[in-house]
Structure formats: structure tokens, C-alpha cells
Amino acid sequence: MCSTSLVVLTHPEDDHLVGLVEVLGRYKVGQVLEPGFEQDTSAYEEWLRLIDEKDIERTIAKAGQQIELGNGIRIEVLHPQEEFLEGTDSDTNNNSVVLRLVWKEVSFLLTGDIYEEAERQILYQGHKLNSTVLKVAHHGSATSTSSHFLAAVDPQVAVICVGKDNPFGHPSDEVLARLSGVKVYRTDEKGTVTFTTDGQRLWVEIEQ
Image (cartoon, rainbow, N blue to C red; front, top):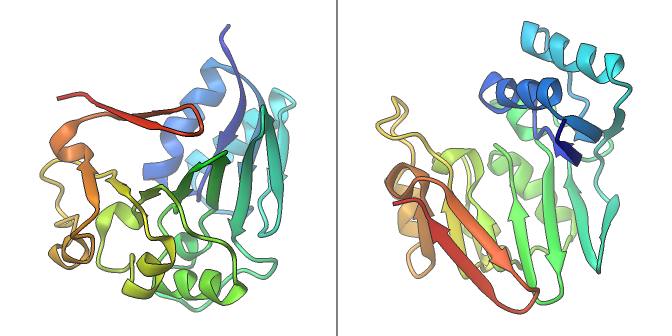
């Protein structure tokens, strides 16, 4: 059986969770990182069952944690905070795990499905956000990627993970306009987007 050391569940909505349940079922996983924001769904129940059955280390992500991956590569946890955001337009999305992956001069900001409410909280906490690559939040929805947040990240490259001809109209024209001047890769147009780095340089491969 193939193995992987760490699997990250950004938040327990089915479009982010169901595929990872398959990963837990098929692969030997050493550790999962998740927000601990529980969801009363069959997919989340199966997620928890597999973690227990396979004795996988379950870590609840909180801002301020750091995970060392070796060779100077580290993951910085920027969100969620100790106290979950409540009363927002989508508490599940707004308590997504947000990570900054750093190796030498290259960094990736991975934003889950956070909305502008979570972006404001992250900005307020004063975390270093400047990153080479931004994984645009919430599939490019207008709920996210506010101008203040984008200015703090100041990415060279952005990637939008979005389904082709999706019924939600993602990514929004508003977000695309804010990203003008940034090299943008969209999975609905380019297929799988693969980033490779040696900590100094960045290479991008696209499927089509």
C-alpha cells in the first residue's frame, strides 16, 4: 500500500472532503490536519471512522502552529483561530484551514474556502502573508480575495481551482479584475496545475 505522511482537510464540506475519504481508505496516512469544525454528514462520519480505525494521528489546526517537513520546509497555520468564527454567511467555510507553505525564497498561501470575514481576521492577527503563489479562496467566488487581503499577499502567481462550466459562475469577474497583473492559472481552462520548486525558482506545468 502506498503511504503519505500528512493529509489536510481544509473544512468538512463534501466538495473538499469526499475525495479525501477515498485517500484515507486507499493509502497509509500518518497524520491528518483539520479544523475540528464538525459536520453532521455521512462523509464526515466516515472520515472520523477511518481515522479511528487506522489509528491516524488527528491534529486540530489552530493559528500559530508550525509543522516542519524537513530540509527547511515548513507549514505555518494561519487559520482558524482558537475561537471559531460564528454568525457569518458560512461558518464552515470561514473556519477553513489556511496554510502558508514556505521553502527558502518560495512560498504558497493555501486559503481553503474562506470568505472576506476570515480574511479580515487573518489580517488583524498580523501574520506574514506575502507569498509567491496564492491558491485563490472559494474557487474564485466574489465572497473572497478582497483587495486588502490580496495586497498583503502580493502574489506573483495565482491558481483558481474551479470546475468547468460550474453552475455558480466561478470565478467571478470581480475577482479576476482584482487579480489583473498577476499570472493566473485556472483549472477549468488548464486542467491540473503542478508547481515545482527548489526553494529559489518556480516551475509550472499545466495539463492542457
